[in-house]
Image (cartoon, rainbow, N blue to C red):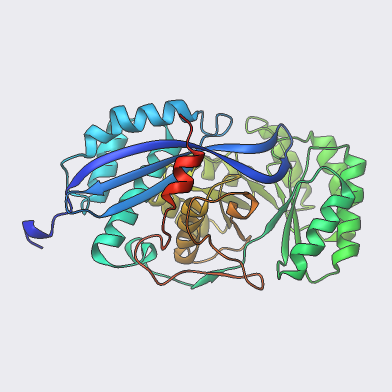
Length: 372
């Protein structure tokens, strides 16, 4: 390609938004009613625009929205402006050489770069990151309503919409109540759905063992992040029991973590763009997982708009095996940032045959929900 084909970056902007949830989501150590995310907008000199998004997650990435906005606009933007976006790999290496950590910020920037290139060259996001293995995903639904009855009602409603994979949030009640919730949910939904539980680091070894023993007949597919990331002794002990597969989430931030978790007996990994630092390291992590025989969840942080969910869908469409499902979290929002939010119909969400991420940002909503 000639110099005329260059996609010179004109501007890089970052905005913080406060997105309301339709109802609170309860996790082991927090209750979320709104979420604070950072949106990145990159424009080329010839007028094409790319968008990216990442949730602020101090407990997961150490980033607040204030720091993310300041880092992107004050430090990352000068590394990109005036440079050719086609050289994305080189640009991401440049950011990596100058920025330590800040994985959410870096991820949002890379998503925006790929989206920009997709619009410039009129190709979908997935075509720029490896090509599709599938044209749709079947997302799981997260249950975190705070009561057994509310979770069952929610699950039945979503089951009627076609959802067949449900994730319970553990560590929010007593183990006895969580066992009861799991058993009642299985009874209510029957055997045609998949169930898993995410403890978000909220269990002790004794609690995890009690939960597993008490729910054997419910056929819970795996338990996600039962212990804090530094409690490797409990992790090894539970894995040695062989009673249930274990998935790592908060314990995996890079390739070295995947190898360590595998050595501890973990069976799978939740891949999140904002945790791993973008599309490129997430694809690398997926390849390592597959080489090590580990299962994969491709997941968003609770909760991100259809901008980030679209990136998750494109990533999941490229990864060879997504054994343990896909988590799209825009559906938990009371207000999205795009004109036509991604739809889940009969339990499936199809990739749009459109340039880049395939979503159009609603500038009025962005302005209304922006934190100033």
